[in-house]
Image (cartoon, rainbow, N blue to C red; front, side, top):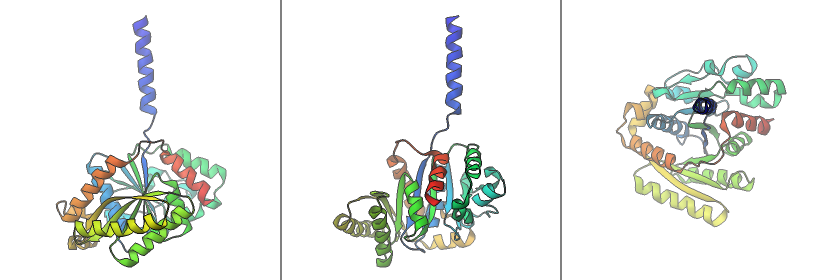
Length: 287
């Protein structure tokens, strides 16, 4: 009888464990200005993490200018708007990219969060429970210092700021991080230097950025890596094939692989929001 009771308890515990979904690491990738390759980085990083047996969901949070679906080589017909207002299932709105990467388009639905009723919010959060387990949710925001970008940064657990060696890009990245620190949103960020000639330029550019941050802000940053400038990136974008798929051995793809490996080793294991907690927080911020 004791053995049977023990087996039943173990079965119950095992079943409960299966029903508990793991909570993903929520990462916001942003930049101080447009045109620095942020979305291309997000797409290729996500695919690389997927190659490393991590399940990734991209949330395209660039209101009005989202193009992650195009970079993935697929077309998003619907968005979060259709889930909330047209009673669609989240599974029907999400699109699948290379190697199984999933994309949830935000679209104009984000700007209407403030108009939602409590019933609409509850119905949407309930639908989120049907989404499968993910290891990472990567939010691709718009660029610049504005309410929506700052709002998405406040929702994440890990912040990545993407910049290039260009002085204007560095200045705008600093302005963005300064606003983040000023409003007590975050006091720590990881930094990526994109479109570098070589690794040396990436390190030198980061050190310039770090010296300014250390001098004027009470905050910390970490160098996550740099991504090489590569003509094959441009060709891959034109063909709508991510470069880590089209040219997995090119310099930029190797850089992304190094960054993904480092990211996996540094993402925190602290209490996480989970996807339902993420959207609950969004509703609160944008209402």
